[in-house]
Length: 141
Length: 124
Image 1 (cartoon, each protein chain N blue to C red):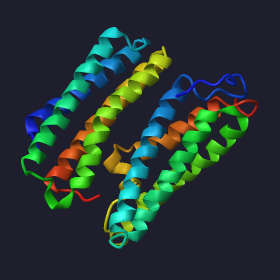
Image 2: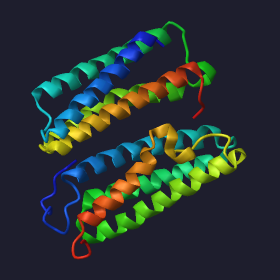
Image 3: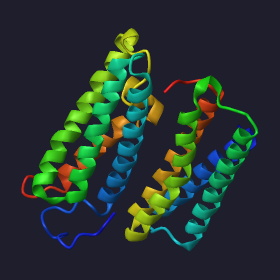
């Protein structure tokens, strides 16, 4: 949570609601990354698809966290894309786990639309998209 | 696992979440009283880590070989509140209060997972 002297550059994503988002994304990055590292290293054979997807989710979370912390217009745009990708991921994987449970012997972060994580995986990207849009520069209404 | 303590941690964390959520609703930052609440819940989680350590030293183990997983959750749980408390110190607005409330909810969720892993209910 270090403060940077360059806070004036571009839209500030690190304060107010942005701070909350960064914190939650940080928590999710650590959670998803440690979970997938543990699963990939110990039980990869059991559910390779689920564990690889967990790892992908962790990477996306890490990426968004970094973008939100850095701030600035460029990071904001990239974070927008990443949040959209995350939302797509949770919707696709959520639907997939419901339609074809046999493909997933074990749960991922995105299974059942993030049910096991209080639906935060679904709520976070939507909140992130709204916040990124609103805090935007010229593009924002 | 010592269930009464787990229940106490979950209830205390949810109360803290409601309290800080109420502060956010009233457009207030996290104040000293809230931090004392944070400290109290933190002490409960540390007590739980201690009790679990004693149980495991006495030969009890999480079901189904979930020892490593259990330990990783056990270590993560007490880290939740210090992280959000530090964030809220730098964010003296209602959003600091929302952050602490969110951290407390995550803490409660982790507690439930911790219990699951100990019982051997859910894998991963």
